Length: 248
Image (cartoon, rainbow, N blue to C red; front, top):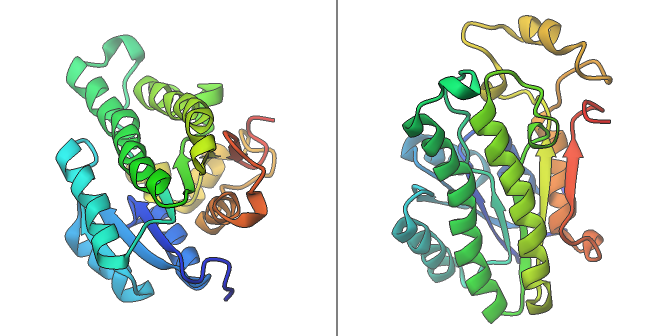
């Protein structure tokens, strides 16, 4: 337990499971008022029951929904100091040339346009109220692209990294500090193939990760909290890779 974020209001999209939920838990443990956002009202409620804070339902592909999300956070809690844009989808695996337009578009709509919409409305509030910190969740696959049949996901996460770098330059003079975290294979449902056990996944991935294991959600959350904290005040437009050496 600490107090790095005491008195701060933190928004985490995709906060009902996996990395988002662990990140929300970590911010709450450091004294923040945490608002988790996502599409599944029941899972959001379960997160709030565990860590406290608040929840807002949102579809990040819907501009009006995203605007309402930020307005609701500010109205209920008096401001927005930190935002973690974590909502994302994997999409259906297929070779790049065999993807259909709807499937490819759905991944980009959530992972890229959704991240941009969140950032757009978060920045609008932050720059008018003394600044803040934003952390976007990208992925190491955006850099190495070595996961077969995941072209849409890889393209979307590369775009998140590029968006982060450019937006960071656009808005740092307004007091909004923007960075990204790129996790590698992490212990979440998203990293598991259908019917795969933890042992199966470990066997499949051990040769690709120099550290020899998948990452823990708490390890990714720790990177997010550092980038959002005053300890990283001189870090702007950085994409922090947390992947056990997979892209080293």
